Length: 221
Image (cartoon, rainbow, N blue to C red):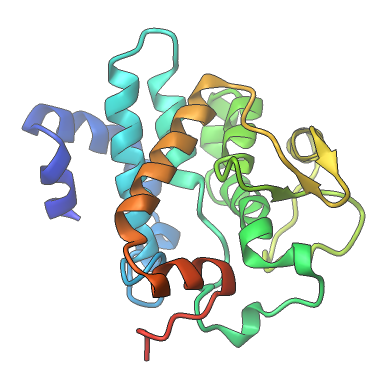
């Protein structure tokens, strides 16, 4: 993690960035996703992916006065907090095509983030946070949050205002059970661009591209 931080940030930027992400970075759930149990694209850990997206988001937002830097960085730090490891995991198999990991995981990330980091959602604009997480995959679609079985792996649910924001966000530009639109807010759109940049860095070969769609990675034992 230090190597990744030093790759992009000056000493002063590193201190500032770490002070922002501390509530998430030091949590047990994030630490777990920084282990080999949670590999993400190709062979990097999910924690590495999330951190790199958050760093690039931070640097992009520092140059702009029309966005809330902390909100954008929090979206980046929470955008992929799905529940189960998704590569080569039989427990992640689903019955319905649009419940597959690629379509479903932004919904899981929202639900997990709301439950794990309520202080962030109580201190910042809930709609901006949730909408940014939900649509971070754009132009890839996301599963609509509706009354059908989404085959979620989250232990905890979501209700009240947060659930309504999630429902409204995923029902924009709805086509059947998927939503195809970008975030309404600049912070979310910046995270989406940072996510694409990091993903392109690590999707370097045919196996990497295949695993992104199938969930199977032949390079992992």
